[in-house]
View (cartoon, one colour):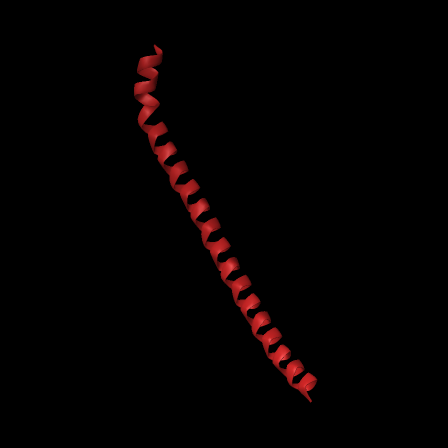
Length: 67
């Protein structure tokens, strides 16, 4: 059996395996992007809450200093 006939027999199976591997890798990368964007949104929300609290406290401190 030559390499060409062997490849003709297993070639379609290798293509299917490669396709499945590519789909799995794409899903893995996509999930990573999704989790990263979710984490970034949480961090931005927390930072916005901290900034709002700091601004509120600054206004209170400014009023106390004026008195």
